[in-house]
Structures are given as C-alpha cells and as structure tokens.
Image 1: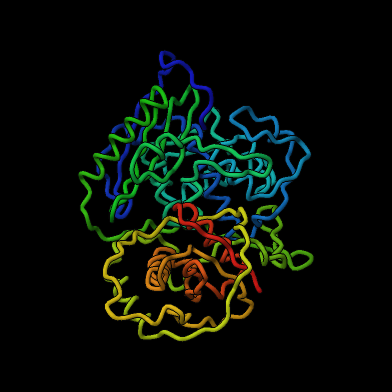
Image 2: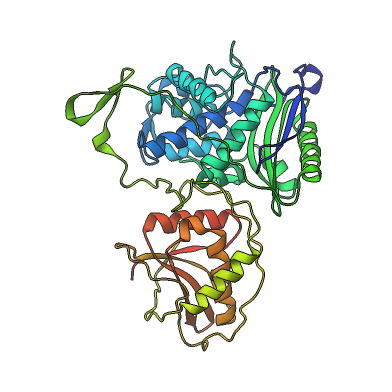
Length: 459
C-alpha cells in the first residue's frame, strides 16, 4: 500500500531482495531473502489470490453485492472511502485492492469470503503454506503492521509467480494505471515504475513505517520474464530505482529461451463435508451452498486443454502455421454486423502471451470486396456478440491483424469467427460468434495492451 511517505531518515526497515526467472523459478539473485519482515501491502497479493480462488470455486461472484462493515469502513488510508452499510460489487473491491491498494476494500474482501477478517487471515496463512510460503503468517487482509504478520522476500516472490501462473486471466489488473472502482476512478500505486521501466506490468507495492517501501515487480521483454522483490526501501523513488536495477540484472542473467516450469498448484488438506438443508454442505462451521453455483458472473474460464498457465514463448512458427491453416480453411460468411457498443468496464485481464509476428501471407488473398471467415465456425449456441479491433486500409491488413490478435489472445478468442467487413471508409476487423461475457473480457484484455476494441452486439 502506498500511503503518505515518511521522511527517509525515519526508515530503519531491514533490506531484503530476490530476483527470479519467472519462467523457471530459478533464483538469479538474493539477499536476506529468508528474513521474516513486515510485508505491508504486499499482503494484498494473497488477499487477491484468495479472491480469485473464491470466484473460481463459486464461493462468491464478481457481481455479488458486498455490504461494507464498520470494521472495513474504519480502516485507515490508503482507502477507497467506503461507508459502513453501503453495498458495492465484489469486482470493484478487487480493483480497489489491486490498483489503489485500498485497505477498506481488502478487509471487505476478506469479510465477504470468510465472514470475518480473522477467519480470512487464517485462510491466508493456510493458503500460504499450501503454496510453499513456509515463513509467512498473516494476521489481516491489508498488511498494516500487526504482531506476527510477517513474510519474506522469497515467499512474496513465490506468491507473485503463482499469481502470474495460476490466475493469468486477472493479471492485467496490476498493469492498469487507473481503474473505475465503483464509486470513483483510482490510480495505480505502482504507476511510476510501470511508466518508467520497459516491459513492467505489475505487481504490487507496499509501505508502512515498520516495513519501509516494498515492491514485488514483474517485467517481460521478448521471451523473458523476471520477477524482482525488494523489502525495506528508503523511499518510493529509491525503491523503484533498486527494483529497476534488479530487473536489469535478471534480464542480463536469464537465458533468452528457457523451458517453462510452472509452480505446483496449491494442495489443500482434505475437508470433511456434511450435508445440511437445501443441498448445502457444512465444513468447518461454514455452509457452502452448492446449488447456487455461479452462472452469470464474468467468471474466468480456463483455456481449453491447458492448465491456465501464461504463454511465455515466442510464436513466430506458430503464427506462420496458423496463417497457413487459416488460408486452407477459409469459408464465406454473409451479413454485416453494425451495432457497436462501448466495452463495459469489467474486471479481468490476462498476462499477455508473447507474440512475435513474423511471416506475412504468402499467397494472394481474396478480392477486397469479398467478406471472408478465416477460422472454423463456432458450434456453440447463444454466441451473438463480437468485438471490433479496428478499421484498416485493405482487406489484407485487416485479415493479418485478426490472425495476430487471435494468437496473442488465444484464451478469450478461441472459437471466435474472424471476419473482415468492407465499409465505405475501410475494412473492419471483427471477431464474431462470441458470448457477451467472453467478448467483454476479450476487449478488456486488448485495451490493456492499448489495442482499440469495441463490443459488437446482436443485430
């Protein structure tokens, strides 16, 4: 959490650092990495990890209206400014905690999931142990200084890597310089590093007087991704400078190509469940209503055939192959889709696959006035939405952009129809045949990479 900075002279927090190759987990540099220190708002990485987990498990939805308690509303800054008794969607609490590092939002997340912040803190510690964070214990959801609330540079680096691999569909939250959080637009506490360091796209800042200035940062360049963690910086500026230095060191030491070695998924102890009324299950005093599974929330969906891991490999050969296959499987589709709606502000986002566009189309395309589909036709029903990713001067340019975009955003665009539509002023590049939630999520991800995107509704 970034709050009003105390003068550097009062900072006496111990210094610790860790640098790893995110692809393999190899440690490239460490200093005092196992010293148990105050994590400050790096804590919210675990709060958010469990929030993502809870949505995935159907414990809560992104659209659940959360009633704010007096306890949450009373948290000191940094905060969103929530009032006791008001209700706010769960998605906005996630945004506020991830981007603004809001303490009131973090506490509200914990209470919404576990009923109380104390119970949530116990779950945080259990989850930490399941992730291999052996020297971490949590006492609250926000990271304000509390006895026994401690972690290490090694553990927080591991947590950052788990967020990257386990929930890539949410990862772009951490690179947003600002976001709407239900009651106002909030700025990212890490925006200076995001703007200043090439390839930086997350993850989380932290500051308290006891902790100093902390940061877990991740950056991607080419095929390489580095995670660097600093505890005990003297100021936000000096901390950012040190993190940039560590990221540079990581990129210098990491190989250009390395096998991806995803961290093991957390293993939780088995829990005995007892059926109770209305088809619910009771476990450890908490009732989980299995009959009310999420059906309408913008719930992240795993990539078909994958373990929901981010792609961190160059795709030159894949692009060429996909282009060749697309050229062989072209099929005509008639009709225009003309209703264009602004993309709604939904939570989500993914770590972006590294695409190395190479190899243009090697044979003549169809006539510019002939709309074409360059992928398979979707067979699932109810997919009447789409997205537009821009207007181009030629059919060739629009079609090429569709191919490149589909390969960069394979998770949400898998199965969508790629269609070029001729307009009086150019050629629209559209993805069609999508469910509304999937189209919305795809736009969010593309907009996070500064790609123009608009949703197209049913005509």
